[in-house]
Image (cartoon, rainbow, N blue to C red):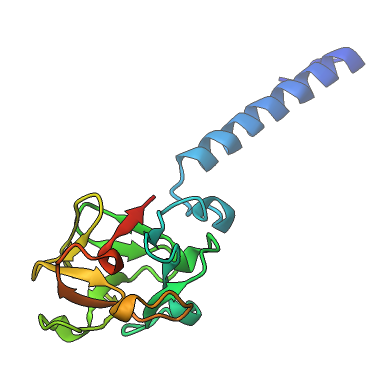
Length: 165
């Protein structure tokens, strides 16, 4: 409502602005728009080798199925962040899940990322095991950037010890 006189006009304009602002604010907060990238960067955890202190990373910012996974200096970037639903580990950057190449159950099977299809992983506080009860392992205890990551029988060795956080 707009009243006569300058004071009444300002009061009416201010009330209208608040009402419109409230509607805009309410409709914006009721929407389901994705969070800005800067807020998404806070999501996820790093999978860190206790042997080397390096992080499990999707190499080269790859977003495709089959993208290589290897160890790299921890930077806190989204290619090194993983979200877990209790069994799958989904990379924050690519949206794909940690996977064993071709679902191979043999020792030495490499890792990559793939569409999330119910991949099963269990973390017991130090070992990360897959559905074949094999452990995430850094072959030959390689401590360098780019070190491969494979699956191997769990023996409690230093190259199979991880910290997630």
